[in-house]
Length: 391
DNA sequence: TGGATTTGCTGGATATGGGA
DNA sequence: TCCCATATCCAGCAAATCCA
Image 1: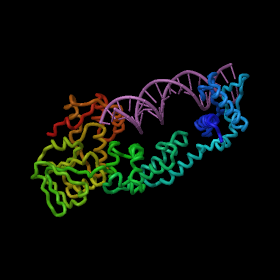
Image 2: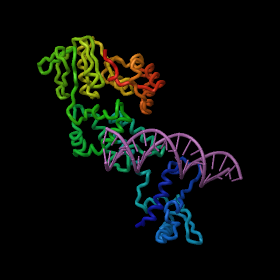
Image 3: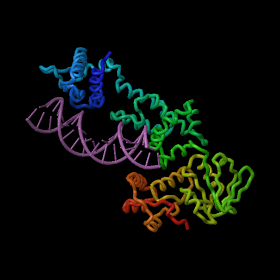
């Protein structure tokens, strides 16, 4: 049974070893691992605190007798530093009852391997973490709890299989047989998906994967008519919009676009203010998941001769949403008022870029918006679509 | 002893979690 | 939702260590 001073000394030496090049086998010189006793125990040199002095010395002597460390004392019985015996590292782990980092790394790799080939996100994540382990860096989203780590990967695997809008609690029950388990992992799961997946905004990741808090709606208005369960609704004769619950989106049999153009709008206020007799407007509710994409595809299949465009913010998020929409629906949406002329016209209403905006804009270079992005970066500006007059 | 190697420290950026 | 404290990561530089 080790006492607290022995534990602290040995753990500190092993920590140092595990962070070293010797641990990785990449060392070019033979290293020794030592810690200063003063630094480890701030009260060791405090003469008024004899208990600590004596306790630490006893701990050092026990470890030295067992051959796990070497230490030298001066005439006053003060030890300046302790050194780990390299050839006794295994015994040191055993004495502490501490799992060697190599074993933990292997267990993490085993967990990662169990999710190999499940989906592209998990494969990218697995590849990156194995690379990080090889470089002796920490494994992302692993805080020492293997079960939690496995559950995070399981959540990612399960989330990508959700095909219909599902409440987070119901998803948690289905994936973990526990309605609260997903809530505990949610932040890490979302961070992993956002970093390794392809999502416009972090706060839209779950909705994009069909996990919702409440039933969601797609708002439509303008030049078109829809047929749901045998009932025809002619939107062209209505003054405003209607919201179609996602649960009945799949029941729509026919969408007949009577105008020449179909336009998706990013923000709700702009959707409400937009007005044109020749356009069918769609507000996707801030995100587009599989059900919404199927809705768009259905419209396109039945009305492929129309013009398709997207009206959004002139910022990284807006460009990203448009590209994502095009990619996921295979419909060639054209940007509407998301160009350099519009930005210049409303320059007075523009806002300054954040560091994150700059980074994301640079990532978007070469993806169809170079001219406007160059201007945004050069003039430190972005524009929300609410500032843009639709006409 | 001096050059090469490796670690430690620091500050800045970013993420996270808790409380108001 | 915002603010604040804390944790984590990273890069750059200084210091410590190793060894020919």
